[in-house]
Amino acid sequence: MFSQGQVIFGICFFIVFVIIMIFAYRKDLALHKIFYKGNYKVLLVFLLFILILFLIKIFMKR
Image 1 (cartoon, rainbow, N blue to C red):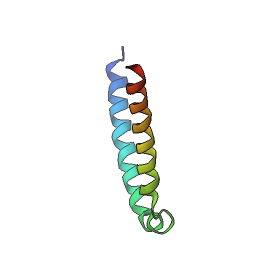
Image 2: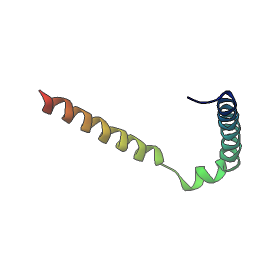
Image 3: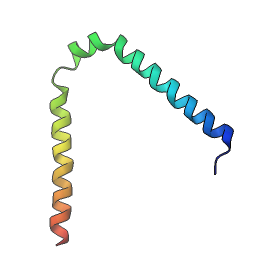
């Protein structure tokens, strides 16, 4: 499906991308604490909404 060179490039690209994202996040960590307070609440509500949708789907099948 993929040549050996494509696989190696993909793995190297992924590793470098993750490293750069870690450095960028650490650099902006102080700003994140100021501007994104309470964003975990939005994430929890979103996950709860997805869970409710799955439960509705399961119960409506039966």
